[in-house]
Image (cartoon, rainbow, N blue to C red; front, side, top):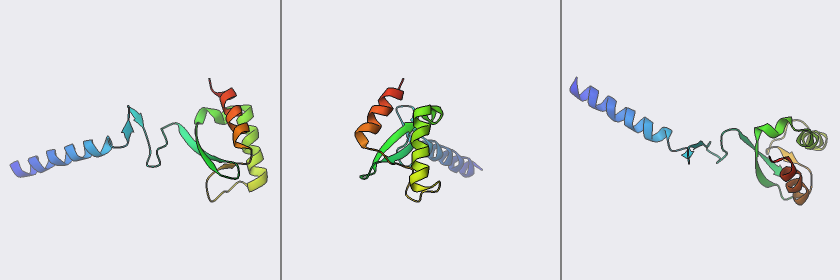
Length: 99
C-alpha cells in the first residue's frame, strides 16, 4: 500500500504541474496562446491575427464587422474568422472600442 500511495502522490504532483503549464501571469491561456475570455480574428488580405476580448461581441461596431464578414465569406469559415477590412482601419475601430 505504501508504493500505491507514493505513486498516487507522484501522479497528483505531475497533474498539478501539467495544469499550470498553460498559465502565464495567472491568466489562463489555451494551446494557441489565446487568453481565456478572448478569441482570434484575422483581418484583411494579409490575414493578420488579432486577439479580441469576448466583450467586443456585444459592441455595435464589432457586430457590423461580423455582419460584413458573414456577407463576404459566409457564416462558416474554414480558416478562422476573417474580417474583410483594411488592417489600419480595423486597429482604429478596435482602439475606439477598448475601454
